[in-house]
Length: 202
Length: 192
Image 1 (cartoon, rainbow over the protein chains, first blue to last red):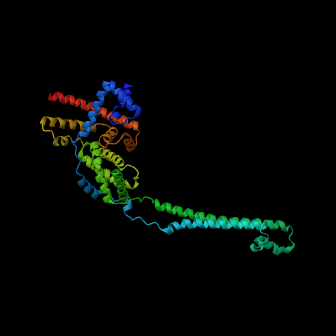
Image 2: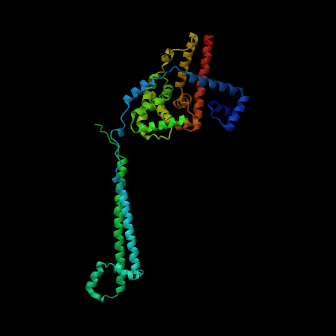
Image 3: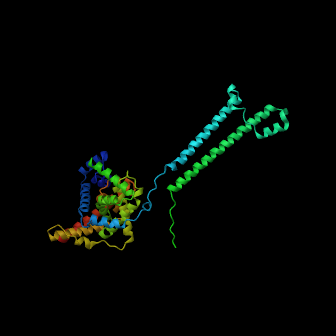
């Protein structure tokens, strides 16, 4: 107990003890002459340190005037901060709007096409049209006329190929927009994290 | 309330200085000059070296100020830089001895010549004792005695656990206690 309290004498002197620890220390000090003596000596050390004025500091004004003359230029002081252009932020916003627009158009097209094929549109289907015809089906129809067997199967294959072509074109659009967006992000990162300029040593 | 206004003003000064305003930085230096100089002087034990260390500390602060978070305590941040600057100055000038004569030349307020001489001798012993402490223990002692930082603040400033702060302070004060008690006994026998 005595050794433990002894290690806390400095903390007690600096008012860093609280609660139970503080009460334990006060109780211990009341009955321990060794710790009382050591505490007084530590207090004397602290007072002597703080009372020591042998090393005087130079005057503040002289120091500050000297310091102002020797302050180095900061790298960012060499160039004024560029104002952030609105056009700069319109690029990613425009790309995102375009992406949403194309996605919406393709989704609606798919929905309408599917509804038309299943006959859900009823009489309104004439406003939509009869659907696209693949080049290979056009060529086959021209070559064999209306005599082609298995017309329903060919029609189904035609619809599948048209749907795949639509999906592919939609994917190309989206991939293009995403690539442009990434390019903008890379450019933005490089602009805000410039590589340090290497000084020539020779 | 006054303290709060002062804090707001200091935050404003920091922001201005971060954007390159040298006058704002000068005002910050003026506010923290005494504390920083006191810390480096006690770390170096020599006013000449301390002036170099203080200048180096404020120049580092100026260069690194843009990365300082205004939410943090500028004083503690400056003390940390000051401690490092003082240690660097001491490392680059290891041959520099403690300026004992400087302490002895200082005018003493005591009217009695004998008391004045005793005080000056004690000052020299004190400086030597502080200077002989290991860097880590001296840094903790200086931040506590001259910087007025709490254990938690010292812990944050030096980036060490509070337990380490306590053990280093125990070591430093006990070393000084032994030296000062020995010195007092010698002085008493000398002037008895």
